[in-house]
Length: 414
Ligand SMILES: [Zn+2]
Image (cartoon, rainbow, N blue to C red; front, side):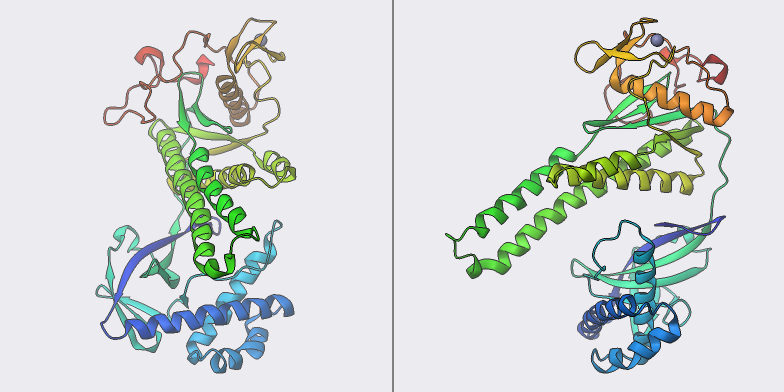
């Protein structure tokens, strides 16, 4: 997943690959050596700022061939990948430790190191693998670099494709996304729905990991006896928590963006940068780290899904979105659990509803200029889940998104 040049998207197509019998173990061994070689190469490239092919070649080529026993072409691919990884790490302002490859793999440079033909992929050193489960939607586009990785004991080929960006349509309105700790509220002045977050479920696994860690760091237990098994178990729990969040983020962003596309809305989200920065200042608890992860991933995936689907995206300043009256711009006051009220115009609503209305309003003003006060219908008597309590948008015949099946949202109505 990456946003490429202007006008082009880089997609990654994944497919299972099954090697010819007899060569599998040899290939996996090569991929293991490659992983070790790559981690060495990344360190060397970063330490020496060897970001050009010439410099990296000089420093690494013979070491990769001799110490890691890589064939010459594979050694070249290895420092090429190390340069790519080092560059993206150096460009990241939030970078932590130098990245390390964890899974056994092979980087395959386009045109030189692999070829896809007749349902097979042929790679350097004469390996030939049958492709299983092939996403053929992007066959028409040229392939870029690829990599072979070993995931859960299976070989997976990931091929990058350069695909033209879809043209964005002209939005008829805005679908606002309000992200908070408990849930995600999606909607606008005509419609609203809530999507649950998986924070609690992911947190459960983080807590399991922590409990184990605590238990086995006490001197009472002979932790060293079982250290490896325990460590793997702890790692498994952390990974599980992370996977839960990542799966959820993909599903939720897909749902939001498809809904916007169906009704030709633009997606509007708040800029969460400050929120994430403030969270980073908090003590390093699991809950906080999961929130940071889900906010960051959600932003990335919503933006990416918008690009991929040609859905216009508007990012708004989060300032005051949950404390300003969407009708008259006055300050709102608390009025019971999660409800807020405007003392000036009597507008009253749930916090999430207020946030949605304000995000919608800000996005519309970005789209059309003027900041028009929103002449929203009174929300107090409206069932928040107008799709009958499920988070599925209606399928098949699209029902107009109006109240009681009325007119679709018109901009003049606002
Ligand atoms: Zn008001």
